[in-house]
Amino acid sequence: MDARALTKVFERGRRTWIQRLRREPDHRERFVAVDGIELRVEQGEIFGMLGPNGAGKTTTMRILATLLLPTSGAARVLGIDVREQPREVRRRFGAVLSGERSLYWKLTARENLEYFAALYHLPPRRTRERIESVLDAVKLTDRADDYVERYSMGMRQRLVLARALLPDPPLLLLDEPTVGLDPQAARDMRERVLELRSEGKTVLLTTHYMEEADQLCDRVAIIDHGRIVALDTPTALKRTIQAEEVVRLEIAAEADGVVSRLSENAQVARQERADGLLHLTMHTVSARDFVPRAFDAARAAGATIKHVEVVPVTLEDVFLALTGRALRE
Amino acid sequence: MLLLELRAFGAAAVREWRQLRRYPTFGLGLLFWPIVLPAMYVLQARGYSGGDQRAIDAFAERSGTNEIAGFLFIGWSMYMWLSIVLWGPGTLLRTEQVRGSLEALFLTPASRIGILFGPAVAHLVPALWMYVVVGIALRFGFGLVVEPAAVLRAAVVILLAVPALYGMGALFATLVLRVGEVVGPIQVVRGVFTVLCGITFPIVILPDLARSAALALPPTYIIADLRAVLLTGADLVDLVPDLAILLGAGVVLCALAAVAFRRAEAYARRGGRLAQY
Ligand SMILES: Nc1ncnc2c1ncn2[C@@H]1O[C@H](COP(=O)(O)OP(=O)(O)OP(=O)(O)O)[C@@H](O)[C@H]1O
Ligand SMILES: [Mg+2]
Image (cartoon, rainbow over all chains, first blue to last red; front, side, top):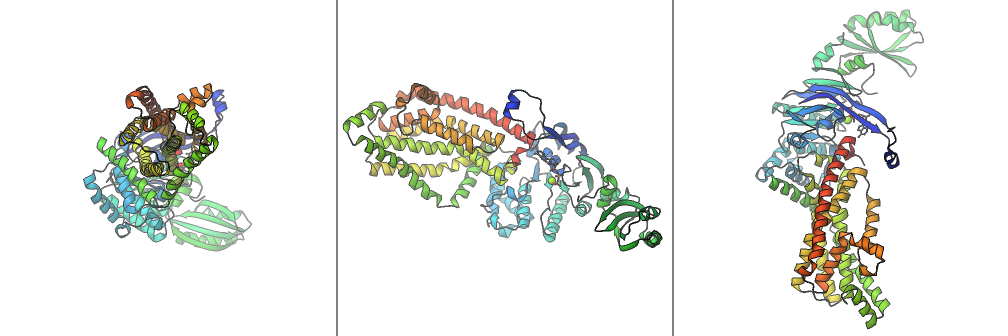
């Protein structure tokens, strides 16, 4: 699957009929949600799009899923153009896009699947066997004849995945598959996704949980403001920051000098004042060397370090280094 | 391929029916209003005419029949059927949109026609049930006897009217994709149909302008032709011009709806409106 210079521009606000009739110039504000995305997902890999709220992950996904037309650029799914032959594309992927609301709550899981099996044009002879197999894959067999309204959130999300698996598609598009799930259910879902890869399926997923992207994905595209700011394996991405470890410091101080003193020994990735404290995120090669020096530097500047935390480098830090902002802002 | 599309269409009908069936009490309303509403008009007509033969003759002269009860019941039954096929697809599409299932449907390769009209078919089951009830009420409450052959002819009229009605239904569904809420336009059109199409009166009594407008609306023909075959014993041959108009309107409306629906879908895909409401 690949995307070339994919761009989506939304218009905000309304254009009234009167404006249209008078052919007045269009004053609507244009908003670039996806700005020239280039990516190529190889067969059999789990590819993740990681980015903060509003980065354009879902929009990209919906273009690939034929629900949105791109403003410009092209995307092909298994070699078929999403704009030219949307119906052919729809035959070839399963998607978890709009979440649990997209189910019929007044029907049972099995009835939901029966309906979608027909819409996916499964041959009648294979339908029953497929339904049993996808129910089994998401471990819902024993609750298959319960109404969906009586399901938990996690079960509904699993049923949505089962529905996406119905046509046995080579490609799966999963938009935030674990959002809103409790830790256990989220772990289950991630295991399902790994199983899919072992069955040879290609998975494209979005998330704003960096741990998820790190654990699950073979390759990750970090997206911000509709652009890919980095794309590589999680390990390679983490290697791009010149640091082995991340040290978080909370310092009680007025003096600004402390920051410059500290930066002699490590790289300041981020600084922020909150609750009367200075919060610093430092990237360093060795925390063991840096921490004692940090205390010396603080003392010299007349400041006190209230709290020290040493953590391994995560994709969050990569994002921070690339954009200067935290993922969850 | 066509077979698979038909199956998708059938599955949409079955799905809707399963949901309907979960609320068995809805059938009760269907027993009540189809009888009470026209019965009220029959009583009103009797009250105004005072049972005077001259009044009945005057009615017969304008409408071609003196079966006032039959006349009104057919009008209202048609009105209810129109409600199902005209606003049905649009309203159901809107329900899917608000519920959030519309996108999931549009993700499948199934033809949009099946998705659109399949569910409306499920609503024909209660409609049929309604006609049986109305038939029984007419037979035993008002002593109207209709021959089986006439019922068959009525079925042919209804069948020939299907393209026109479904074409209009699809146009409403298009409006849903375009503007979201359609309650307003539906109210307006419903009002126009109620006044112009002769649901409770023969359209000859309308002023010239209104009558010309009525003759431009397919439901006018359906109602008039049904009355003709059921009440005055007209043969289908007598109705050929009317039926040709109906069928022609059907072809035009369906073609129009197909174009409009495709454009509305493209519009929705440009603005991401499938999931918005
Ligand atoms: N149909 C639409 N019309 C107008 N603007 C839209 C539409 N859909 C999305 N947007 C805008 O496009 C931007 C990107 O949205 P998108 O849903 O792709 O973000 P996201 O990366 O999925 O974020 P999140 O992590 O919150 O799901 C947002 O600013 C959003 O407001
Ligand atoms: Mg999103």
